[in-house]
Length: 279
Image 1: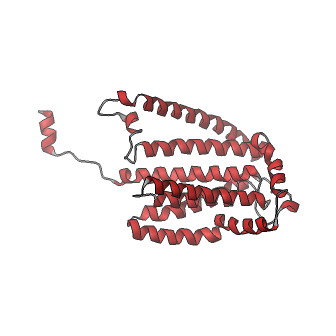
Image 2: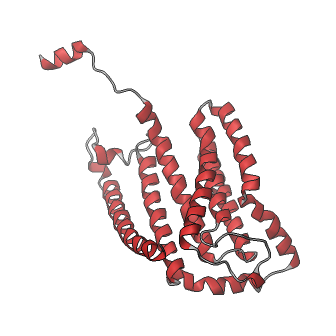
Image 3: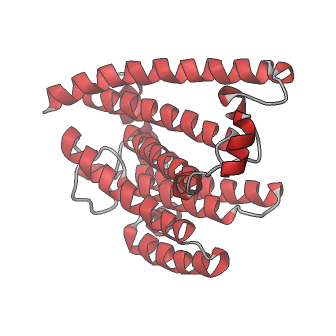
């Protein structure tokens, strides 16, 4: 199973990198030639249009999905083969274990709960009810729960496929049971708090949206640091958890943006209009 996983990751990583680079060139070319696009833009020009769900927002989500997927494939391959960035895992662990203090240990043990399902499931349930009361739409209300569920399931699946051991027990300051890669806490923190921030951005100013995004990123970053400080994960585990969460959230956002177009019935042209066109 490990050999097959390595082969798939090696091929998929190269393919995803090629697709990501190609899409990046397309977007750059469109932005460069934006002033030359005629008044009635085509399909590619419409992908860069702001203010439309299937415009720049969808393009950004697709590009981010490819980037996160490629990052996850590369990090997983590195963790399995112990090459690339995974070579720095022992040095990163030694840095955190060498800077431990009693007050930092207590703080890390408290803050790491922001990535635990024990805290996050009540948060997404309460937030879902609040989003339903605010927006009266079921999709924004359930997306935070879907983000958490996907991050949890995806991390467990990859853990079972990779089977990477945890850091040495002598370096741990917390009780852990499953495999190491990827970090479940890091994945759940970024996926959940990031999706909550995205759902709260609707109708808010640019400053408020920036603050929400920065707050979610800060929580996920701190949770990842606590997993390293407590010796529960290697550095690559945390990075892999973030890549998994980012890719899953992008996939959910793509579905969210396309949902109105998929649910809307096809427009039917009036017979009189058809007759006039034929005439």
